[in-house]
Image (cartoon, rainbow, N blue to C red; front, side, top):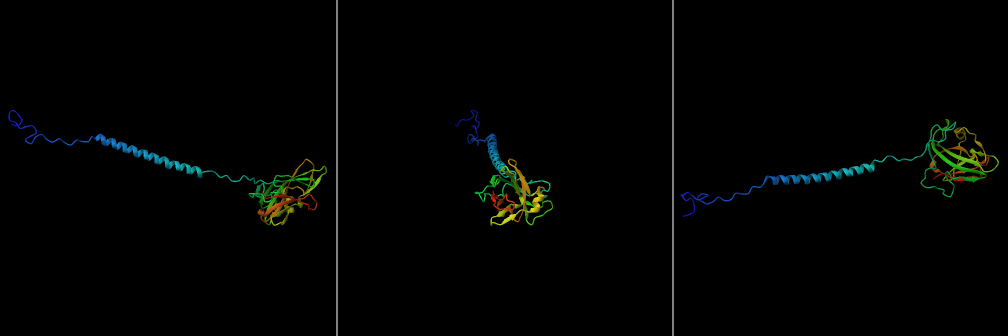
Length: 231
């Protein structure tokens, strides 16, 4: 007799024996944990991408945001009694990358010739008017510092100086514009130890063609010493 109820009842589990074990249920906290972990990984990836994108943007803005660093040329020029009414570009030399005549004295380099010390200190190009006088091309104003090296006084003749082009063409000073530029006479008394600054105006078609300047202390010019005007 099969085991069962001693009083004749059916065995546990019904006539077919005990019920089969049920399927084990998965805990809902496992899915919650997996979901949180996935969100964390996605968040980290997004943060890394944002840092990379904004970092590149900042670098690009830093590279392209610099201010203008243009030249520091002083455009003032001389402003004497009859000075130019339209100032041009002032520079030390005509702006060439290299001096075209390195064997000659250049700007701010004194040269002594016939008991006079000459120093070319400035050049102004692009002047379109001097005391109501207009050029056929453009005025170029050269500023010189001159000083006597002898005990005797000398005359410095501003109207006997020349500019020379690369081809050797001589350009004389513009007499009227030179005399009107600063109101000084064309000839200047020089004394030892007392340099004098003078300006000479030339009417030039193209300043880039200027190579040298010829300086003379002669009454009617001649016997010049040359100075480089390019660098």
